[in-house]
Length: 405
Image 1: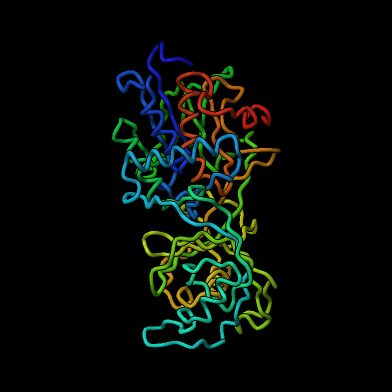
Image 2: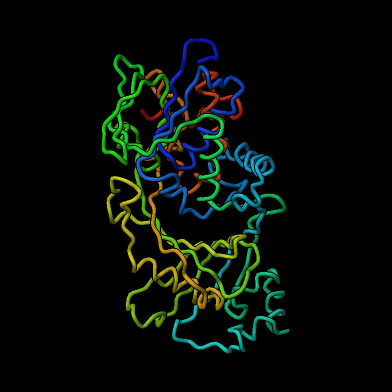
């Protein structure tokens, strides 16, 4: 495609980070002219209602896939600078490491002083333990006597973070400010007679009415729901649970990949527990801490993100696991108990980013847990596909959907 030609009706399906970033970069492409091009984003539930609002928000230069990570990581920094991302969506650099920790049974008592602070945190003996294990001294919100090892996963400037819900909704709003229209509606059909996109039919969330709009270009960015609107897409779904905790005091900026040795008497309420737990724990600049557990495929993908089922047992597992290694998390307030579905590519490689065999039809899906990290880079190249016919900012031939369709 090129800038020349008749009016273009560009439809994005999916209001997660990929769809919202695609809308943002389409409306900021040099060829974009709101008098000639219309961008419409269709979202079945709510903007950032799925994984894009419930993710951890970690950004890393060592993320996957490498051919889009560098572009996207740099774009995150540019977006934060241009739109005050520090205050608007919590953008900041963060430390990142792997930790091995011996978990406590939840029935164990710890010595506390007034205000709930563990005495051992500030003691000389505790600081000495941190030094001997090469554990950063400011990582004092994990109990030092439980820490066994720490290995840094990032050098200066290699890892950062955003608040995923705030980032995704901000991208949507910024796209709207440049002319994109957002409609809450569930897509029921993409008409593509003779191998060319023609229209999109959807049911409005508010009225329940069915409407059909013309489309010259359709970007399917529906995450785990991609297959529902594009049956041939090799995208599957995996559920992930997470919690948000407001600790008893502010904690230092770390994203932790943990390996927690779970004791046999971990919790009196649960008789069967894994011997090792691996929750990811991310401190956020809004003085909350996000923690997520392992994925599962026990419950099929529901019709929309609003219908995702939360398993209270899995939620309590995460709360118990992080509480077993940190007093400030154990005694903190749980502010969110949630679940979402992540989109996985069922074939080799992934995500899928680019053209399909049908003219005007594109896929941007299958980003697994790296959707927030790779959202800006994906949105940028999707705008290039639509307006220039190919990706120019990154070499993403290995992500070509036509390799698997």
